[in-house]
Length: 172
Image (cartoon, rainbow, N blue to C red):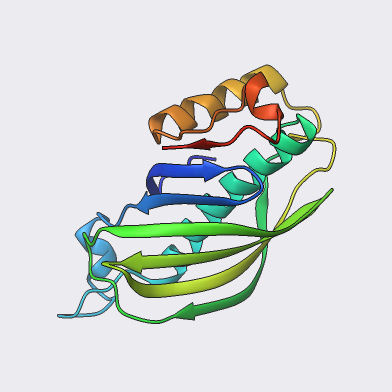
Protein backbone atom coordinates (compact mmCIF):
# COMPACT_ATOMS: atom_id res chain seq x y z
CA UNK A 1 0.00 0.00 0.00
CA UNK A 2 1.42 3.32 -1.02
CA UNK A 3 -0.33 6.29 0.42
CA UNK A 4 -0.06 8.17 -2.91
CA UNK A 5 -3.01 10.51 -2.35
CA UNK A 6 -1.24 12.02 0.65
CA UNK A 7 1.43 14.61 0.01
CA UNK A 8 2.49 14.77 3.65
CA UNK A 9 1.48 13.94 7.21
CA UNK A 10 1.89 17.00 9.40
CA UNK A 11 0.46 15.78 12.70
CA UNK A 12 -0.10 12.32 14.16
CA UNK A 13 -1.03 11.64 17.77
CA UNK A 14 -1.78 7.91 18.18
CA UNK A 15 -5.23 7.28 19.60
CA UNK A 16 -6.34 10.85 18.95
CA UNK A 17 -5.79 12.60 15.60
CA UNK A 18 -3.84 12.97 12.38
CA UNK A 19 -3.54 15.71 9.77
CA UNK A 20 -1.90 15.99 6.41
CA UNK A 21 -1.97 17.46 2.94
CA UNK A 22 -3.66 15.78 -0.01
CA UNK A 23 -2.37 15.66 -3.57
CA UNK A 24 -4.73 16.84 -6.34
CA UNK A 25 -2.16 17.08 -9.14
CA UNK A 26 -3.73 14.28 -11.16
CA UNK A 27 -3.17 13.83 -14.90
CA UNK A 28 -5.40 16.05 -17.05
CA UNK A 29 -6.95 12.92 -18.62
CA UNK A 30 -8.74 12.28 -15.34
CA UNK A 31 -10.72 15.49 -15.74
CA UNK A 32 -11.67 15.26 -19.43
CA UNK A 33 -15.04 13.73 -18.59
CA UNK A 34 -15.26 14.93 -15.01
CA UNK A 35 -16.58 17.38 -16.17
CA UNK A 36 -16.08 18.89 -19.66
CA UNK A 37 -15.08 22.57 -19.24
CA UNK A 38 -15.62 22.29 -15.46
CA UNK A 39 -12.96 19.92 -14.02
CA UNK A 40 -13.41 18.70 -10.45
CA UNK A 41 -11.64 16.09 -8.34
CA UNK A 42 -13.89 13.00 -8.09
CA UNK A 43 -15.44 12.61 -4.65
CA UNK A 44 -14.24 9.02 -4.44
CA UNK A 45 -10.65 10.35 -4.40
CA UNK A 46 -11.49 12.62 -1.46
CA UNK A 47 -12.87 9.57 0.39
CA UNK A 48 -9.82 7.49 -0.54
CA UNK A 49 -7.45 10.20 0.74
CA UNK A 50 -9.46 10.23 3.97
CA UNK A 51 -9.04 6.45 4.15
CA UNK A 52 -5.27 6.80 3.65
CA UNK A 53 -4.91 9.21 6.57
CA UNK A 54 -7.48 7.46 8.77
CA UNK A 55 -5.79 4.12 8.16
CA UNK A 56 -2.45 5.60 9.13
CA UNK A 57 -4.00 6.95 12.36
CA UNK A 58 -5.44 3.50 13.12
CA UNK A 59 -2.08 1.84 12.41
CA UNK A 60 -0.27 4.24 14.76
CA UNK A 61 -2.96 3.89 17.44
CA UNK A 62 -2.82 0.09 17.50
CA UNK A 63 0.98 0.19 17.50
CA UNK A 64 1.03 2.62 20.42
CA UNK A 65 -1.52 0.61 22.40
CA UNK A 66 -0.39 -2.95 21.63
CA UNK A 67 3.10 -2.71 20.10
CA UNK A 68 2.10 -4.48 16.88
CA UNK A 69 1.90 -3.29 13.31
CA UNK A 70 -1.51 -3.71 11.64
CA UNK A 71 -2.58 -2.85 8.11
CA UNK A 72 -6.07 -1.37 8.28
CA UNK A 73 -8.25 -1.49 5.20
CA UNK A 74 -11.36 0.55 4.52
CA UNK A 75 -14.24 -1.80 5.30
CA UNK A 76 -17.18 0.59 5.33
CA UNK A 77 -18.03 4.16 4.42
CA UNK A 78 -20.69 4.82 7.03
CA UNK A 79 -21.22 8.38 5.88
CA UNK A 80 -19.74 10.68 3.27
CA UNK A 81 -20.83 14.21 2.52
CA UNK A 82 -19.27 16.03 -0.42
CA UNK A 83 -19.89 19.68 0.37
CA UNK A 84 -18.12 21.71 -2.31
CA UNK A 85 -16.29 21.30 -5.61
CA UNK A 86 -12.52 20.81 -5.60
CA UNK A 87 -10.66 21.96 -8.69
CA UNK A 88 -7.50 20.18 -9.88
CA UNK A 89 -4.23 21.27 -8.25
CA UNK A 90 -6.03 22.71 -5.21
CA UNK A 91 -4.14 22.48 -1.89
CA UNK A 92 -6.23 20.42 0.56
CA UNK A 93 -5.86 19.63 4.25
CA UNK A 94 -7.13 16.27 5.56
CA UNK A 95 -7.86 15.78 9.27
CA UNK A 96 -8.78 12.51 10.96
CA UNK A 97 -9.89 11.76 14.51
CA UNK A 98 -10.21 8.33 16.09
CA UNK A 99 -13.73 7.67 17.40
CA UNK A 100 -13.39 4.01 18.35
CA UNK A 101 -10.65 1.39 18.46
CA UNK A 102 -11.40 -2.32 18.88
CA UNK A 103 -9.12 -5.38 18.63
CA UNK A 104 -10.14 -5.98 14.99
CA UNK A 105 -11.27 -2.58 13.73
CA UNK A 106 -11.66 1.14 14.22
CA UNK A 107 -13.90 4.07 13.36
CA UNK A 108 -12.57 7.47 12.25
CA UNK A 109 -14.09 10.80 11.32
CA UNK A 110 -12.34 12.62 8.50
CA UNK A 111 -12.67 16.16 7.16
CA UNK A 112 -11.17 17.49 3.91
CA UNK A 113 -10.70 21.29 3.81
CA UNK A 114 -9.63 23.97 1.36
CA UNK A 115 -8.80 27.42 2.77
CA UNK A 116 -10.67 26.60 6.02
CA UNK A 117 -13.75 25.58 4.01
CA UNK A 118 -15.04 22.04 4.47
CA UNK A 119 -15.11 20.21 1.12
CA UNK A 120 -15.98 16.76 2.45
CA UNK A 121 -16.66 14.97 5.70
CA UNK A 122 -16.93 11.26 6.30
CA UNK A 123 -17.13 8.52 8.87
CA UNK A 124 -14.98 5.53 7.89
CA UNK A 125 -14.72 2.07 9.39
CA UNK A 126 -11.49 0.09 9.15
CA UNK A 127 -10.79 -3.59 9.72
CA UNK A 128 -7.47 -5.33 10.31
CA UNK A 129 -5.98 -8.64 11.41
CA UNK A 130 -6.07 -8.52 15.26
CA UNK A 131 -2.75 -10.40 15.56
CA UNK A 132 -0.99 -7.79 13.42
CA UNK A 133 0.23 -7.37 9.85
CA UNK A 134 -0.87 -10.11 7.50
CA UNK A 135 -0.59 -13.86 8.11
CA UNK A 136 2.47 -15.20 6.32
CA UNK A 137 4.00 -11.77 5.70
CA UNK A 138 7.59 -10.88 6.55
CA UNK A 139 7.26 -8.58 9.60
CA UNK A 140 10.71 -6.98 9.17
CA UNK A 141 10.05 -6.18 5.51
CA UNK A 142 6.58 -4.78 6.27
CA UNK A 143 7.98 -2.66 9.10
CA UNK A 144 10.75 -1.28 6.86
CA UNK A 145 8.23 -0.50 4.13
CA UNK A 146 5.93 1.39 6.50
CA UNK A 147 8.87 3.34 7.92
CA UNK A 148 10.03 4.32 4.41
CA UNK A 149 6.53 5.55 3.53
CA UNK A 150 6.28 7.49 6.80
CA UNK A 151 9.64 9.09 6.04
CA UNK A 152 8.55 9.97 2.47
CA UNK A 153 5.44 11.64 3.88
CA UNK A 154 7.43 13.53 6.53
CA UNK A 155 5.35 11.95 9.29
CA UNK A 156 6.22 13.02 12.82
CA UNK A 157 5.32 9.47 13.98
CA UNK A 158 7.35 6.33 13.30
CA UNK A 159 6.64 2.73 14.22
CA UNK A 160 9.60 2.52 16.61
CA UNK A 161 9.98 1.16 20.12
CA UNK A 162 9.43 4.63 21.63
CA UNK A 163 6.05 4.95 19.92
CA UNK A 164 4.76 1.87 21.79
CA UNK A 165 4.28 3.96 24.91
CA UNK A 166 0.76 5.46 24.51
CA UNK A 167 1.79 8.43 26.66
CA UNK A 168 4.32 9.48 24.02
CA UNK A 169 2.78 11.76 21.40
CA UNK A 170 4.39 12.94 18.21
CA UNK A 171 3.42 16.24 16.55
CA UNK A 172 5.10 18.74 14.33
